[in-house]
Image (cartoon, rainbow, N blue to C red; front, side, top):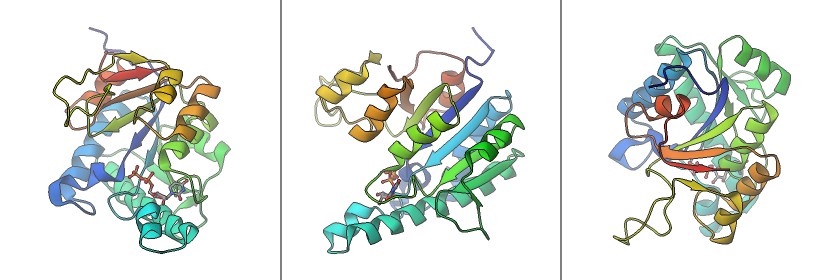
Length: 238
Ligand code: UDP
């Protein structure tokens, strides 16, 4: 079995829900510690790691706007929740002895560096994990799109979407017993079949600049490590 990393630089997308455990909201210490340790295993192989974490465990813009809020204000709140998650993850990673920096797309200099692409790359080269907070910094976007954008900007070789399911299915595996998981998919197929992998903006941006995506279950221990070692887990989209 290959024990050498297949990739030198990766970007990991985590949803906010990944941090909440089974309490249904916010961040649980056990989950954030688990996630940080899973990432630290890969960092110890000297793989350069960027991370984008969502905010859905705290606030989603669409929830605010359905309740009557102005969508831009609601999305600003959503972006702030990604900053909270990023700071928590940074703390947890540093507790695993992995040097980490948070760069925010919305300036808040007292608590995070501003996003500066060249500086982010410098951190990665020096072996520091960089967590990209506050999404793209713009309302009406998602953290999936932010993840693809930062992956392109930092020239990551692949984007890992570590999620709550083990891959991409042809239909909802919870509702349909005969749902089939894909090992591999083209971007076009995802778009045509409207498969729920990432939003269409994110998929199109990945396709336009050939960024491979790998979707797998975060809750299986060692999955991020296996993906970095090039093992066939989850679904690869390219
Ligand atoms: N968001 C935004 N612009 C961005 C990224 C995120 O406005 O570039 C807001 C949006 O309101 C979104 C929230 O931040 O609902 C949290 O992000 P997301 O829903 O992508 O988080 P996840 O589902 O991955 O936890």
